[in-house]
Length: 95
Image (cartoon, rainbow, N blue to C red):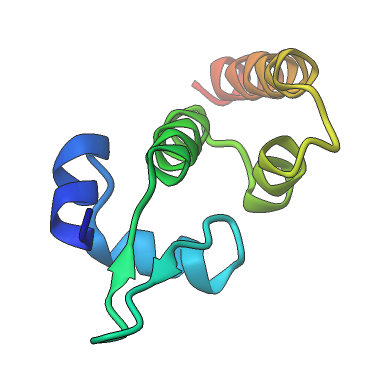
């Protein structure tokens, strides 16, 4: 599928999809005839995961570890939850 279809399926803008590709988080195949990106089901799954992790403000390096299989999703999510809870405490103090 092309980038527009990937955008519709994942909710990730084509601009962000290209950014994630540049950062090495997703690596779509290229059509040999026209060099267009071709997104697989695995690419779509990765983009959905990246989007979900970005929604909880997870840094790209931590996301990279998750999508590369270096860190388990559960472990990364737990760590991010702790960071967000600490941020909530700090914001409450400021308020």
